Image (cartoon, rainbow, N blue to C red; front, side):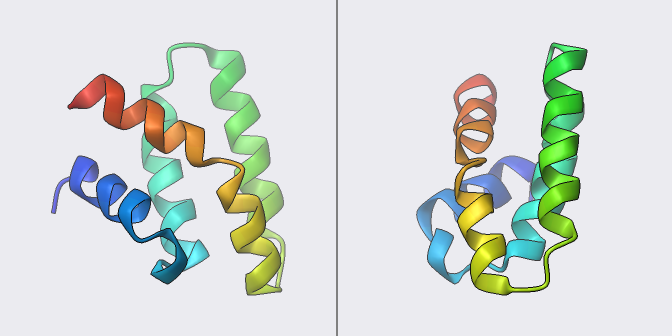
Length: 77
């Protein structure tokens, strides 16, 4: 399954995808971001979510990073 397919899967079925999978995909998308500042910002958000233990809280914060998934699909369709 390509990265693009995995991103589409998350966007289409967010509620049934684990936060760990979302974080793994966001880590793979990060190098595609054009700005180093944006890459660092996303890395900080990912690190913050990774340190959480409550799955519900992790999913809530993962949802705030959905625009990165949308951006990846728009630029790589």
